[in-house]
Length: 474
Image 1 (spheres, one colour):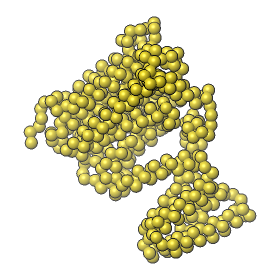
Image 2 (image 1 turned 60 degrees about the horizontal axis):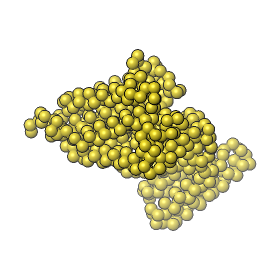
Image 3 (image 1 turned 180 degrees about the vertical axis):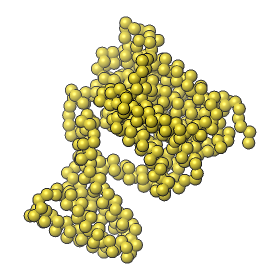
């Protein structure tokens, strides 16, 4: 097969137009968000909108440069790029500049650089390279674990900064693995773990432990349709649990009620092990292991919540769950954001006419809360239009990913779409108060060179791979 020499004719113009539209709209919204009458020129380099313009120009030049590089470069250098970015994540922990309690930035004379933004690109590239190396069966742990490690290693280094927002985004890279054959039960387990995390914070843990145990018994009956072993298991649990509760109440007086339930389940499993072995009851064994894991996870949530999350992260989650109210503190940003968006009504107040924006009621209104400017000045119709553009971009990326001939290009395309989706969902979710505030940018809209460049690099590398989809990668 002949390699295509002119990639411009094969370049997906629709995606390029979407990119340009979002970048320009973002620039104009940054201008509105931090408008300064004394520096009214939109090209004024002393203001954020002037700097954003320069970064957009650099991003476009970078995108053009990416398009002229041979496709095989990204496959052959996927691992070295990943290693270099990991080294940057380690280095920033040592010599990085601390901002807002996090060592996430390299400060230079003329600009700052955030390695975690580019680490998403490096991890996506490395994951695509790993999946392309051979035909993988992601239902096998021996092949799933290395892929998981590629994702989690930069995530852990980012969490050490700490930058919890970027850390969460790395989890989006599990979506391409699902497309490539990872068991849907992994996603189900992740969803249930997230649900159990919030339930643990909301519900008395003892009653939640009893509820989980009861649900496990009902699921065991539904899976086997046999009452006798289920009733036997329930009897053993009651006997074991009752004995342990009595011993703990009258003798030990050490374990909490939920820990006692966990111990009872563990002991009952040992007693019931003969049934799992003799009857080869894999369904029952799986349910038992899932119950045990759920109880262990539940009993670790409070410790992790109190000791691993920073105070402002805990406050934001508690506010979201309605356990705490702090309208003049942690809750202030979200409240002002909701007021700003709500005040826009159907059609908005008009460009540069947003009072919440003009008088700077919303903190970080040009970066994390840029969506407030859209809602206030463009109204509901404008906000829906912007979300429609993002939806169109995401669907377009999925379409492009599906038409790739090589695993490397397809996986990388899904990585790009997944990262963009999580950024858009969480950023807009923060602005309208449905997810905790964790501080991640809205692609192409939020102020910042690092985020704009990283999104541009990811998008244009995929566009280059798509334009050369008929070329040989190996």
